[in-house]
Image 1 (tube, helix red, strand yellow):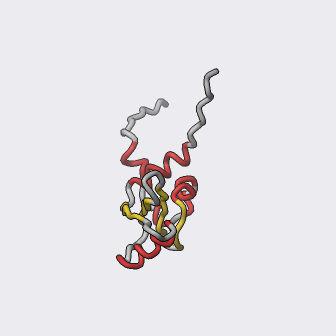
Image 2 (cartoon, rainbow, N blue to C red):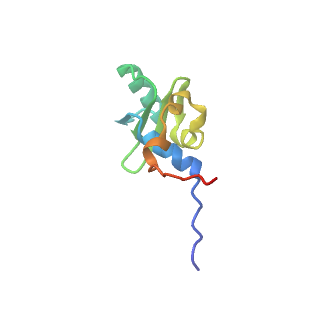
Image 3 (cartoon, helix red, strand yellow):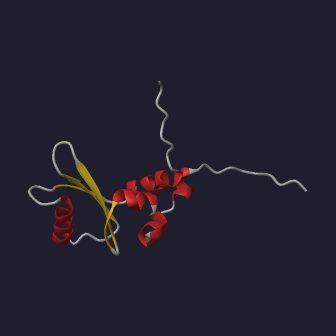
Length: 107
């Protein structure tokens, strides 16, 4: 029996495209929890929001965090709710993604 494919949310796809345009930092968590490692890394380099931190927990698992003006958020939450973050609202995908389409008006 064939498995039904999960529908991809357009809002989340757009959020993922926006996060691709934000600076990325790849780090390893070491002995610390991933969120603690991310916070310490942000503090040590004085990273200015917006930024995406990809924290490698072990050889199989990575956690993604978004550094915003109001704190550290899970990247999946930000993908789904990117319109709530002022620093992401300035990034406009619509101008660069879509080709210009000329339309004629009839009277």
